[in-house]
Length: 229
Image (cartoon, rainbow, N blue to C red; front, top):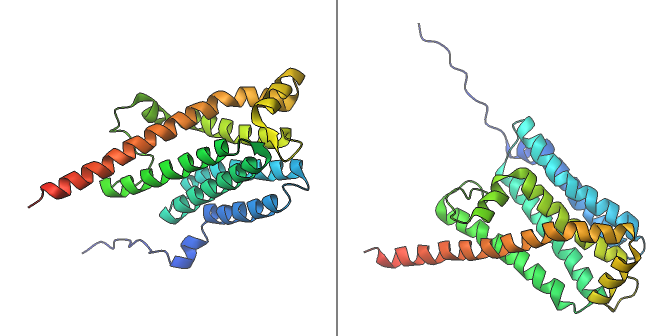
């Protein structure tokens, strides 16, 4: 007598959209929209909402694994939300600090490196852009291979940007002048700037390595296509 085998139920599109981690993602989007709407009228509330949204990025990943609701859509939603949120904050910083090109350059590096990394991931047929086990760069592997290390760098980066936004008083202040004054005063925000700078620096270095590594993958893909008959 043949045994009845349980057939896994295929989820509907709506059910995937309504995964708990994805709902958290939608909440992050709304939270960021409101935060940026009030960023100049209420700096502290903006920073609180922005950071809560950032923390939720880690929470929704844990929830996705906990309830077996990991999805490609959720991963993309997370990355797009992260990149747009950071981009908006960097644009604001470029308007209140001089030279603003410093922050616009950081924005270009962040978007460019992650876009190339995602594209190279698809070319290699990998499931995640965080799969860098075959990389020869130890820092790149350490960043994506150790969640605590990556979390420290990401938190450091966001805390630095938030702190810089809190420190600025006028719309056209020189970045170095504000940093020198804050360090001299020794306020809590200036302490956060110092403590977060190391993590920020590592993340920028990883972005550069990521961009170069991903670009190499794209170039090798082109070379291999040329060699095919």
